[in-house]
Length: 313
Ligand SMILES: Nc1ncnc2c1ncn2[C@@H]1O[C@H](COP(=O)(O)OP(=O)(O)OP(=O)(O)O)[C@@H](O)[C@H]1O
Image (cartoon, rainbow, N blue to C red; front, side, top):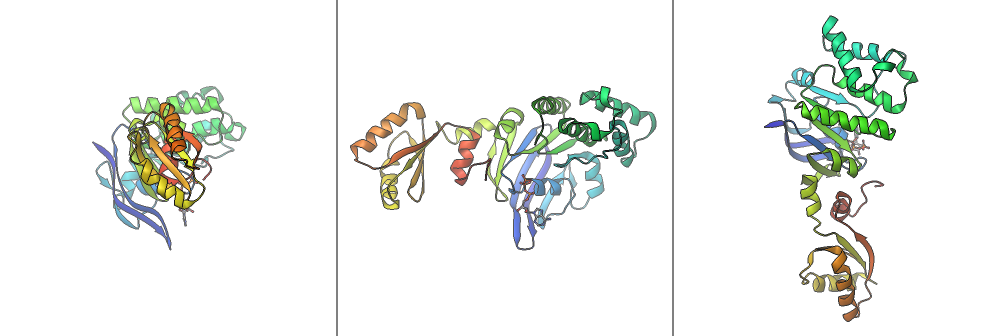
């Protein structure tokens, strides 16, 4: 059952086309990762899925509601944890949470109970009366998450919630996400950390330049690079072209990508086949050198698909 459906969604800012033909279904109850480098279009995509901004064209359906037409209703069922902390620093955690609760029309005893429950959930009951300005970055993030949960949303969007925080807070956020999942809440999580997507997400969309370049479970995505990728560097482009034709006939080479004088070979069983490959190159008296060996991972897939590193691009 779909919680979010995006059909041919585009977003343009003037000349800049930042989300391109996004087609995506996020199922109810899954932890879904949007993984991509800075500027890939993750925040823009979630701002449209949460009715904060409108697509230039295309349709977004959130829990059977059209996100363009039913903005108020959509806002009631989505929780948003923005990239930047959105709290009042001079107010205590309790007062911040009460403030956000009141914005949703929650009052009196139910509000008091919800605030206590959330403080317990994020492990900050004992510091709840202190002003937020006294909190560490990780503690602020945890209250930011609590604020997004105050109105019992069906789906929670977390935009890079672990940037710049300590490992303890990060683990608490991970535990919290698992707890939300166990309660049937859908979580959409953006990150540029592959490890986070690997441990947290049921499915991942890898995005780059406003487009989904791969979609599936982490296992399925990693399987796209079989046993890993061997990078060869030739002396010149012509040699690389000639070699690529020769190498694609080898049975353990599943795919060859060529980029000027560099060749990237997707292979089966990398450990076993590097030596075999070197021997073949030797026999052909090729000048190609093995310049990188990449074991199967999301990072390797990203590098293979885009030619860029995920982290520092
Ligand atoms: N209001 C805006 N006007 C013009 N361009 C924008 C606007 N908002 C975002 N962009 C551009 O859209 C592109 C995608 O930005 P977006 O914030 O969605 O990426 P992101 O994947 O979330 O990156 P990050 O990890 O840095 O947050 C970027 O090139 C950005 O500069």
